Image 1 (tube, rainbow, N blue to C red):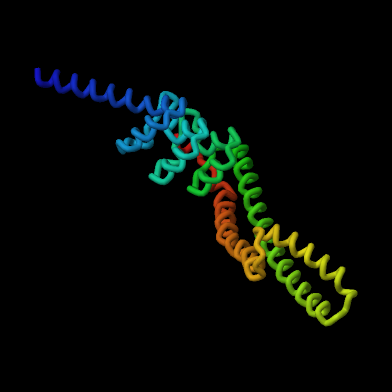
Image 2 (cartoon, rainbow, N blue to C red; image 1 turned 120 degrees about the vertical axis):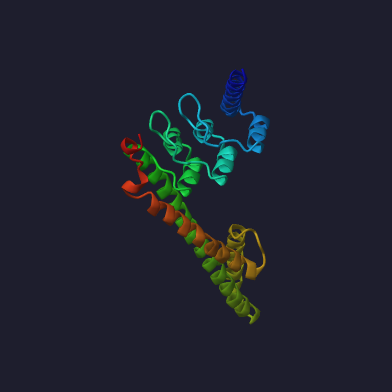
Length: 232
């Protein structure tokens, strides 16, 4: 008798757990933030799967739920879990074209299962790296132009105050030019800030360049592909 009661209790518990696990997938689909938050607070199995073998991470990618994806990755979810089709979360992100999600997954060493998706991911990372490089170049160039412009204005001002009326038009034009550069340089009128802020912007892009170069390096080659034949 006790054995039957124990088995019945175990069955009810498993059914309850299964129903609770499936609720999270429904909550993600309908974007029920309260239910999702409550599920996370209960410290569940983050790698639970639905009927298609898809993890919570995969369903979150399909729904484009960036905040949930971020929280799952922060809690060390299995980023390369395969569903019944042998696809990962990054595969779905690549097929759906979710650029920001692709970049975040790639930064966590996520992998794909096909060459097609690999090429999509590589193209997006290349584009992001190119943007970072362009921003670094423009920030540095703006800083140099700001510094040169102030130097030119200083020289023209010295010449004008010396009594040469010929420098008045040049002086006014230089002021207009530096006003435009100041507008580009965060709208500051302080000579030091006008020069230093773009330079700081250039310096701040260095870690970003290193970061995206590292991710680009990680996703180059066959190591970025999951050998689904072996895993299956």
